[in-house]
Length: 303
Image 1 (cartoon, rainbow, N blue to C red):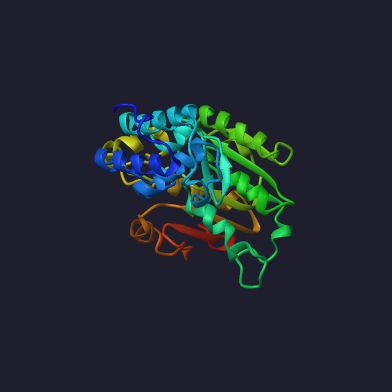
Image 2: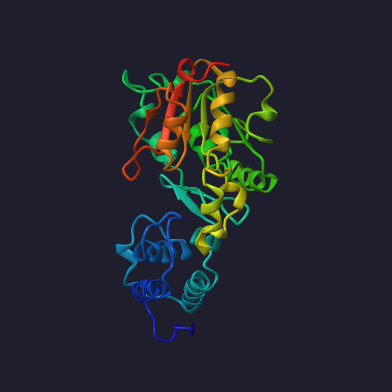
C-alpha cells in the first residue's frame, strides 16, 4: 500500500479510503464490528482519540500530518497483518466501557456483557436477580481481559468479585484493566484452572464465558481469529469440554440461591441433547439466540 497522506485531507477522506482498502482486502470482522464501515469508523475515531459513539461532527475536520500518518499506518497494518483492530489500537469496548487489550487475551465480545446491561438484573420482581444490592459474591471464570468481572463489579456495587484464568498472560492484561477502572479493592484475580484456585468458596453469581469452539473449527479459523490465543477458543472435539466441567462443578460453588450464567456459542442442540434433564433458561440478546444459558443452584446437576 502506498502512503495516501498527500491525497487525503479530512477524516471523511480517511474513512472512505479505509472502507475501500478493507473491502478490497476482503477482511474478516467480528471483533467489535461486523462490516467495513463500522471497522473504519472505529479505526479513525479511536485512532485519533475521538469519542467513538459520534462520527458525524468530525467527518469534515482537516487532519494534521501526524494524524494522517497515524491513520494510514493503522489502515495498512489492519490489511497487511490481518490482526483484529482492537490489537492495533490496544482498545476494545463492551457496552461503552473501554478495556485495554493486546495479543495476550481474546478480544472481549461476550453476549453476557449485553445481558448484564439489560433488565435481567434490574431489581424487578421478574428479574433473575430481583435484589442486585443483595449480591455479595461474584465469580467470573475464564476472565481473559477481565471485562465481565469488571462489568459485574460495576453492576453489583456491594459485591466482592473474583476472576480466574488459566493463562498468566491474560491475567496480566486483566490486572491492567482492574487498575484502570479503580476496582483493585473489590476485584481479585486468581491463576488456575476454572474453580481449582477457589477452595470451597461459594458465590451468589457465577459468570462463565469459557472457550467453546471445536478443535477442527479452530484449525480452520480465518487469520483474524488465528491472531487470538488458541487456548481462548478451543475446548475439545466438540467445543464443550470446559462447559461440561463447569456444569459439573458449579453447584459446589453456588450459594443456596446462587445463579450460573454461561455462554456456549451455537451448540445449544448438543448441550440440550446431552443434558435433557436440565431446565436451561436461554438468555437471548439483540444479535444472539440460544447462546447463553442460566441455571439456578437448585436446577444444576446434583453433586
